[in-house]
Length: 290
Image (cartoon, rainbow, N blue to C red):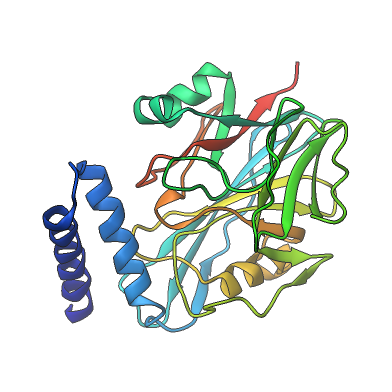
């Protein structure tokens, strides 16, 4: 109970401080985003090692589209939380990247974004600046939107010839690419989990992309407001074989997380809705191939 009271107090204080010290009008959603982000970063990992309480199983939503819910927890934490995962067959579904203007991102909800593109699923994209400009390489519909590389983001997720792939900046082909985002860090590479992350103790909300041995794309997010995984833990979970409760990725990369983390799916009778605390300018969409 003491931990719960401390976290609630921290959120309230952070929100009040932001409200009182801002030099311009602040929206309630900005206060909430700041408060949650502050709580996550101050808190760190005081709950002990994460545990897989229930690994769940892949359930078909549509042919070539599956969903899975993993219930996770910590030895001494307040409550369990979930990792929501979507697995997509590129033979049945296309992966697209969409960029919103600041005006669009302020008025369009995820459901409206999906409806505008006839998408079945959506996940937030890479990191962006305070002007809502995506950082690093960005290619949409074959057109280079931003070609300036982002320092420290050593992976590029891209779609070429209808196939999702992940490459290093050095191996990225640059030509005949339909969509591309620069992101990072790598979480899994060639089947091996990555180590040596900066601030490996930091627990946060997470978003990630992965590819399995069959070339299927995995979208994954944690759903807790003030809990989550460190990059080390996320890497471990993504690389871990399915037989051991993991997601069995051979390659995986981190997306923007924290208050940006969000996912939505509406396919058949299946529904996933992980709300974000912040507007984001770039999304990845799953669209049925024509």
